[in-house]
Amino acid sequence: MLNNIKTGLLIAFGSIALFANAQRDTTLNREVEVVKSFKPTIQDAHKINDMPKIEETEHQKPTFNYNIKSEPIVNAFAVNPLKAASIASAPKEETGYGFIRAGAGNYNCPYGELFFNHLASKKSIFGIHAKHLSSNGTLKLEGGDRVDAPFSNNEAEVYFNQFFRESVLSFNVDYDRDAFNYYGYPLNPVPDQLTGPNQTINYFGTKQFFQKVGSV
Image (cartoon, rainbow, N blue to C red; front, side, top):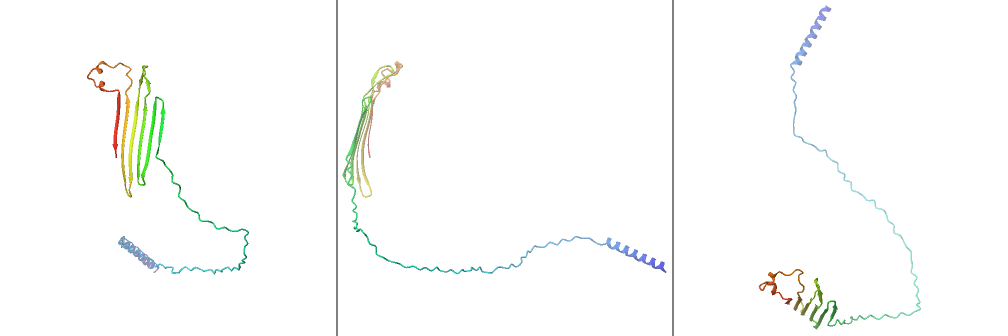
């Protein structure tokens, strides 16, 4: 009887093991991945609705006690009233009619210049300007000869201005003249080809001057 029970149990356990192995082999293993759109959610926030409060402090006004004691002041001197100051215009300055400059230098060099201005009226002025500078000296050349080397510079100008309320009428005439003498000679002799009768060098004079007249 006991052997039959043991045999039955062994057969039962063996059948269970075979059934478990068969069930394990026939089981299908699959991996499933579920994808869906992301929908974030935000939790409700709690706002602070408390209004700030300022604790007012009680200010106490200070109290003062004062009084005025008035007494007359006795002056030992008398006060004299001041006179109003009178404003006078500056005296008219006499500017004159102009001036003259003159001088002299070495090589017999005189110099003179004239400036003349005249107020014909309160709105018009007339003037003259003249200048002279010259020299009449002699110079010693490298060859030992002494030659005259004069020159002169002359200027003259006349102008007139008439002033209106919003414009000016101006008139000006000027004249310039510069003069000088060629002097000296070359250290080497002049070639014969340049001293012929048809050469331009023979048409140059020793005295030269330049003059100009202008008006505005």
